[in-house]
Length: 197
Length: 197
Image (cartoon, rainbow over all chains, first blue to last red):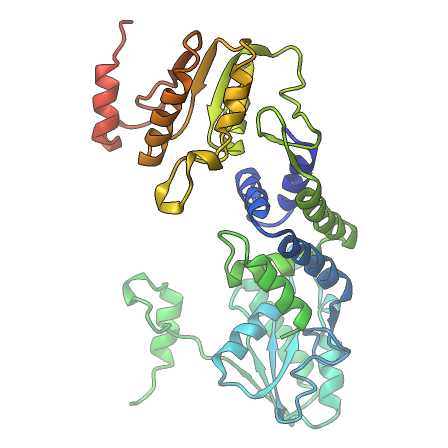
């Protein structure tokens, strides 16, 4: 087997969800693509890894010191939505329904994986709250054991700011979910938090 | 969204089977990888696309003018296995049971996709047969309509070499296949070509 092909396959296999067969298929496809297109793919990967930064204010991925959201003056600076990771921020942004600010923790507290509160951007969040500009913190982190631990820790930390309202996003049955397949905890929660129509 | 992130995602999406979500997941994973590893991935892609060549003799992918198989003097030069693409060659090589040579056509005749015999490396194969060294041509191409057309065309071309035996690989029920789910054509073929045990 060609060394060049073997190399590119081995390197591609370092990516999640890409095994030997997929790597080979991707490499073969690259041969059908224009050289310039493959060059541009290769360059964009290197440039992304080297030049990407974390926003100083919210820890979102950014090209500049401040991310586009933090530098957007039209957004509501009185609300901060706390998320685990950048992908979650993007999911919320894609709804087009939220116009406040974000704060990316960079994970959740997980003693199993050796991730403690100091590994997350919690101090940065508290610093922002010190300005007194923020009136509500919406915690939008997962309902896993680690997520709940993080929520509990955050609640305690945020007690230092009694004027700040702390909320979590609603849990319930998703649109399009079939009740038959929804887990008991979610159904119990959805029943308890039922609302009048 | 960060331009760097947006760029890398758009470029990754040019690859087959990679949509927006997967591209984003791959990009996020790259942030967790060492810079050197990502650099080496990026370089191997560019180097592969620029430096890979096709073997002058068999059209296999190669770093040199001749591929490792064609330059291996221990292989049996009297047998040539004709395959559609490099991936097929690799599948046969992986069995470790075939010690002859290969010839990669680079596709099959497909009028629908505008691929005619002249787009495939058939002349190169005939040139090799002119040396008189080859005694058997094993055709190992798919049984699709295009594959059968190509086989028919090859058979005609190879009539110019009456001393060369032309064979095709056996069709039948695969090991591990359940008869219940095998198509009728394959079963019919497997019945007609039954062998005494």
